Image 1 (cartoon, rainbow, N blue to C red):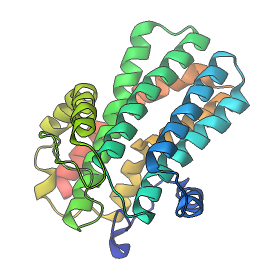
Image 2: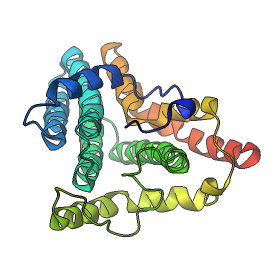
Image 3: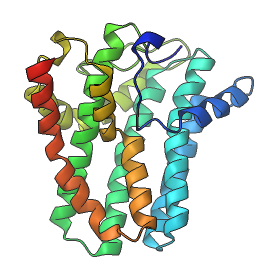
Image 4: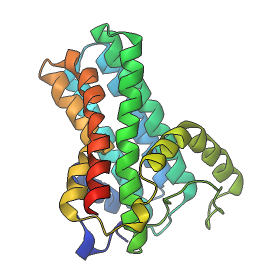
Length: 254
């Protein structure tokens, strides 16, 4: 099962790792490996990337950032090929992402001796960008009966699916709402009628996909190896202004 029906798929600039992720998932289809195992693998890759940034091994950091992005797609692909979606996996993935994002920002701030407030604002901007992209993407997926493990509004603890424990879902959902709740509320307050508007066109979703985590990690990787580490946090801070640009465009045209 794909996230979107074929006729509604768009070019997702943040999803460049999907082809390799599918190969990984298919190779693990008939093994005892679970999507959770793959999620743990991307956590390990992210931690190695953070260590490499701190040690200023930027090519290695770039490699593990991209590997993390690929594995981040592979856990969901494995859940689909095994036909075992789970809220446990969905929320563990998201909780791991935001914690790793914070660690990446801290690491970059450390090696560039950046003011702590710029680090905080860059992190907040990074998360707002990702939240807007996910908001629009989940709305699109829900409209066309794509993958509905993610929901437009994450207000209520979901009922555990077959094969997972409700206690695990409860704990991870609690962590998810604690870490993402404020970002979700901000984006919803800025564009509360997005789910009632027109179907978002492919070119628009492709543009917004520059806010996707995969693309964000790619930008960090490229800037690290290009010797532009001092510009990474200012870039994400300034690029957050595009959140308001995309919302205005959505409201006016779609």
